[in-house]
Length: 443
Image (tube, one colour):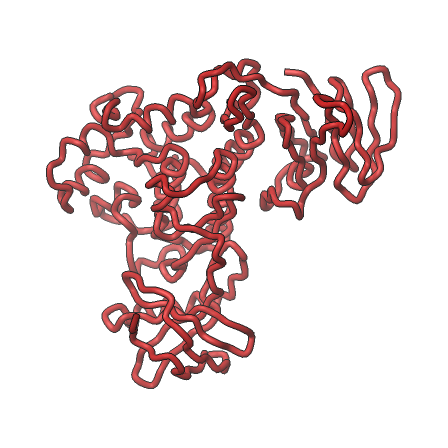
């Protein structure tokens, strides 16, 4: 594969660091990406095609670099690079191999789990929330700009050279399928920003959880040629949610679009309520779109309520707080709801409900009322459910923190649970987790 830059080409970043091109990694719509050697290790260099190397794009890149946005969920531009002929690009970290693009997921070419998908949705919401909190609008949230780890749900946001300061009207408006209706129509005064990002974010979340676009029902099937005019009608001029409770003119075809019918039917009501709100009133009034904090709270609650089917082992999303779980989406067997660990945080008090399935875990973010970031990795593990090594079916909660707990049984007796120790799981057990209080409750 040959590109614009030859192997061995020497460039200098704006911070004075020498950059040597070693190989071409790939190409996209705006430019090519190369592996380069720097004094701080190998990096990736995005180099713009001449047609995209406009003064406007150059200014955007320089502004993004100057912001010095340090967040491991973003492949953020870290240095601006230019050559003597006027070409330019920027340095960023190299993409780790465990992260995959989303189109293969939607084509069912990647294996993952409901827990990983919910985690990916939660992490995506928080990543864009972090960006928005710094006054930056992404403007092109879509399936092409997010990568995820199918095993853990961790995400990376790439192509961050689309982002601009809120209110800046320069650059692109987004990808048609994901653009807010007012941008598709070209309404007077409509411009890409955090409000339009909220629509794009909801489309992406719907596709991750339902494997289908929220506005593509019978109307999309009836279109013979999905050209720009047809897309503008579908996504902008006459957008209609496929599960609009008051209008079924764009309902999914049960034969051609049966997957989304099934996934929607087994989705928890808490998620369906947010999607319905965003793709009905939110389609027409940008000011009432679902905020990142609303998505965050519901996604966390649903993720903590996932249970494993006792018959086939498949993971099932359940409605948080429900006492009746229904049947498994895979084998139709009756689901059994395990006990819950209800964690009450210090002030301002909040409750987190965690279903104690066989592999249940408690993380640091469960112990605080408003975590700035959720993290379900081993690094934040506080407690986990473990099975007794000699008594199958008997479980306990193992202390994986660095603090001792105080456990109070239903008869009022207490015990200390040191780090590494396990307390037997019984209904009514109360735990002081070092500030947060927890109680085990049967469903």
